[in-house]
Structure formats: structure tokens, C-alpha cells
Length: 498
Image 1 (cartoon, helix red, strand yellow):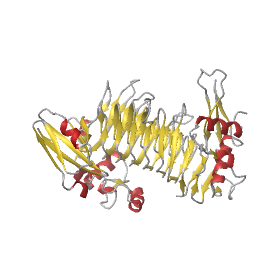
Image 2 (spheres, rainbow, N blue to C red; image 1 turned 45 degrees about the vertical axis):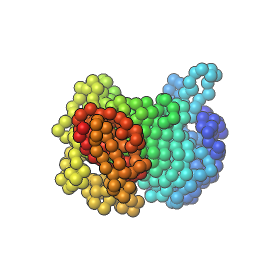
Image 3 (cartoon, one colour; image 1 turned 90 degrees about the vertical axis):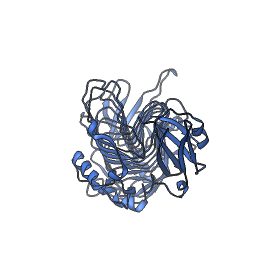
Image 4 (spheres, rainbow, N blue to C red; image 1 turned 30 degrees about the horizontal axis):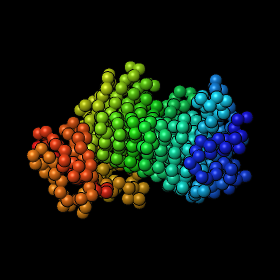
């Protein structure tokens, strides 16, 4: 059988040669800390070696054939089996391959791309609020999940997840998800050489039965997500998910998200089908070429109906060839239904950016897809709008957390304890003495010598970005411009007329 641990370990280490560590699969414990694997008496995991046993058995002794494809095999493991963490887990010292994932198959012809067997975890993991630290590997905490899998209450406190070659689906919590990911927090950085890195989940998919079983709910990302910024093929980075065909709801992104060639977004970069609802972004979203969005970058509809609603963006979005605060490209590929409504944008954090459509035959409610001022965004009236549109009572506003922007009731304690999201868009001492004005077709900024300046047109297009000197050297036609001045975490936006 191809899933012998020694073969797997050698192949995965070869695929990620930049890691000096050995694999955690080679350091698996012989038994768990207790339990029998039932819901009432889950297997207990207290050490990294015991967590490595779960990963090793998912690839090895617990794996059985789910489906035989022409060129590869899909395995499943631990359906109906329960696990719970009982202590924080430090994964430093060895590479983490994930609980399930992909294994490269050998090929005789070096010019032929290899296929990959897939190993899907089908059980239930309860992190019980414990923290995973120093996680370095290929896929995420869990590499691949199946229809009945659940991953709950897991916090990845630190780490670096890097997807190599054809292993494109990487997330801080799960690489490829077809089950439930709930109440999870990711702080690890996630990078893919090519496509679909996500802060929480790389690819959120339908289940084996075709149902929208991939559910990402009540999750937060604080890690940096990038599609390999130092090479030319990076695309489709998402703060919560890289790509989605199922359900994302009640999630928030605070991490910076970037891509090299196409697509970066605060929540789900590519929405091929499914639903994104009741989510918000406060991270900085950047794409070096085209398609960047505070919520979604490409709503495609290639795999079925797609809907994005009851979301807001309060983070900067930068893209030289086209950007929108909510959705960039609503492209109806297969004449599937696409609906975009109740999508709101902070008019000061990222002014003047709306939905940008390309060959769109879709339902876009322009009356509820708008820029609004922060004061309105931080009001109970806005919370009422979001709760009604999103058919929930989870949205709240509390001036002591999230800098007064709306968040979710279940996030309040975490935000209060960690200080996440406080004063990220508010100018402080570093910007207290700035002055912005126009003279002879040039925009001049004084004060805050180390600040980065961005000049936006009325349509939200970035017209100039760089140091004070670089921006002042640019010439502008007559009109109204928004000048954004950033120093560290402090931002001030000023309108200027030329």
C-alpha cells in the first residue's frame, strides 16, 4: 500500500527541501494520553508526539480506500472518532505535514507532473482552546478533511505554512475542507507558491455527496497570507479562505493579504459557488496586478450559484489594475446565479471603491453595496441593518472592542483580552502634525517623515503611492482626491481639491 509512513515522510521532506527539520511523522507516540475515541470519551492529546500519532495514523494504519481514481486514490480515516487536546502543543523542531493531506506518487518520466494520493481526516478534533505554537509545514494543522469531519476550538498561535509545487491548498487550520471548521483562530503566516492560500482554510469545498458541507464559521485570522510574493505565479489569497464553493459565515480577518498576479481578498478570494455572509475585514489587502477586494476578489459562479451579503470592509485595498472594497470581479462563467447585496465599505479606510464587474449578468443591489462613513458603521443602526440582512442576531457594536466597529457576540471576549483591532485606523501622535494641501497640480504632505502616502481618485483608483517626496513629484489634473497617510498602524485620510 502506497501510504507507508517511511515513503510518505521521504517524499514530503523532498518536496519541502527548504526545511532543515525532520518530519513529526517520524516522532509519533505509540499511544494517546487516554480515552477510547468516543464522543463521551475522546482520545486525549497532551504532547506533540501524541498529535503526531494522529497525523501518522491518518496517513497510515487508520486509512482505508474511499475512492479509486484513474491516476490516484482517495483515502479516509477516523470517521466517527473523537479527539481532544488537553495541553498547549509546541511543534518546534520538526516539520508538520498536517493531519491528512496529499502524498506525491512516483513517476518514471521526469517530464510528467506527478499525481497525489489524498488522505482525508473524517473525525472530530476539539482543540478545547489550547494553542498550537511553532507550526511549520505544508498544509496547516489539518491537511484535508472529509464530509463528516469537525475541527473546533483550535488556536494556531504561531508558525509558517508554505505550500510547494502542486500542493496549492494551504490554510492555518485546514488545507482542503469539506467538513466543519468552527471557533478557530489562526495567527500563523500562510504562503502558497501558486494558488489558494487561506488564513483559516485554503479551499472550502463541497462534500463527497455534493452537499455544501464545507462550513467555516466563527473563525478569525490574524496571520499574514500571501501567494508567493517573490515569484510571478502567486494568485488568489484569502484572509479566511483562498477559494470557496460552500459556506463561510461569521468570520473576521485582521491579517494582511497579498498576491503577485491575481486575486487577494479579506474573506474569500475566489467564490466559485456557495455563500459568504456575515463577515468583515480589517486587514490590508494588496495585489500587485489585478483583482483585490476587502471581502471577495472574484465571484465566478463556475460551480453553481454564489451569494455574498451582510459583510463590511474597513481595511485598505490596493491594486493598480482594478480594485473594489467588497467584490472585484463578479464574472458569471456558466450562467449561474450570482447575488451581491448588503456589502458595505468604510469610506475613510478605503474610499470610493465599489463593486467592479466584468461581463456580469448578475443580481447586484447597488442600493445596499455602498461606502458609508465610520460614524455610521459604528452605530447600532448599522448593526441592525447587518443583523436583518444576514438573518442573525450575532452582530453587536461595543466601543471597547474592535475600535468600535461591528463584530460578533462570540468574538467580544477574545477581542477584549487580546486587544485585536483596536485603533488600527485612528491617527495618533505620529500623524498629529501632518498637513496635506495642493499647489500647482501637486499634492504636498508635511510632517510624519517616514509615512507612506497613497493618493486615490474619486473612483477609488490608486493614482500614486510612496514617500512624501515621490508623491509630491507626481502631477494631477483638476478634481477631488483622497490622500491616505499611514505611519505604522496609524492612518489619516484627507480630501484634497486641485
